[in-house]
Image 1: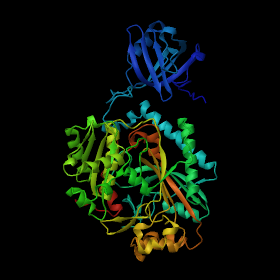
Image 2 (image 1 turned 180 degrees about the horizontal axis):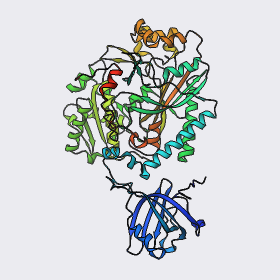
Image 3 (image 1 turned 30 degrees about the vertical axis):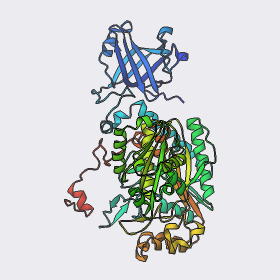
Image 4 (image 1 turned 90 degrees about the horizontal axis):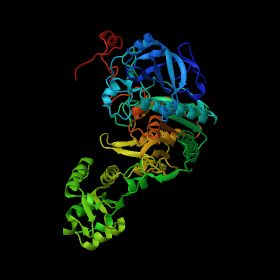
Length: 593
């Protein structure tokens, strides 16, 4: 499709040899300027590409003088004739590299100050805070524009995929009731209802379930969500998810629809065929082998349980650990890196382990022979059995942690990722996807001294575990599933509770009083009295998927105007102070903390 307007006949990325001899009108930003004295060359840029423009004094002295004024990032309008660069001057790295435009008129549409960082070098390392302060300049860079264009293409593909399968896109409210059972809500005060607040949605969870009650058996939405939580590279206070819900389905139906979407995304946007069905891994196996419910399968280094091998070892630290009700000793093997584990390296890792939560680190090296400080306390035959179980050979290292089970597994999971990064074991060109299933329904909250929902309070318990809801909530499994790509959770969902009695059992286990459940969820429970279909769904992290598929380390690089890790917009200084009049209208008084 031609994008010609009164100010341009072509974009800066479309001219080629077939256009030689044409008179054209181009507009754009000055990407580069090279003044060779007699001739002036300008690379003119828009989001479609770059075209070289030649200013030759033979075509007019006044034109040539005007061209001397041009500087980087000026916006100019050029009329000229397309001509060949000549065989010796072809730039084969550019789609327009065979041609240039010989200018015969120039108009400077807008001048620009010197930019705070270079925009024409994508590989330049620029401090992120500076990029975010001048985000409108950062977005001119091809590195950033490519990401946002990819994001647009992904959104179009998602919409077409679901629309072609009888899903209906429904917009749910942005101002909703606060139902705090997850992360902290962002609250919005009501001017006309003093002392009352709306909440920004952490997810359209309740609304999409109500849509199933309403008879919309297939719903989707690309939707903004908001969570007031600690931020990191893959979190933002406002983020985008692909929200999906289906009626008359079981878990396998949701998984298949999602897998086919992912297959289409990879095929259309990455030219990669992924094998279906995706691997399924129970939560317990993910934790046992990888110390994480979102394991990165692009490399090995699985966790090896060694508790039984060290039983009654006579080594006090190990014996005390195994005397705990949930004590565990486990390790990981690093292949062919024994020489890298100097005393200094081991001491640094030991300190790192402590910051990760464990008490310490034991090391066994195989560098011609088995060497370890543990030989002072533990028989050589025991350590040989440890080596055999871990599959260790010459040049390998085994790192061992002894602590409470959840600390041991979590610490080794973190250590596994750190060592893979340190030793370059991760192939960034590779994509590994899997489903993690059979999550616990509940997790214990030490602060509140009660069970809370591991996913959310509308997740259905496994049919065989329903009788444990009253007697042993810790053993109840959920009909929940997470989609994981390269060690990042990119989606999570569940089959929902559709029976009021089961929903009340869930609230009972979480010690939510009758008064609180009516206050927070009364409208949902009332809806459940009017015929509810079995239903389930999933929410996919749109920003995370874009970041992974474009090779970006942070979702901030695939969001047009993101916040920092302190939830601040450096460009417009949000959040900001508002005047006293606004606060009075909202019946709010700000006090110093």
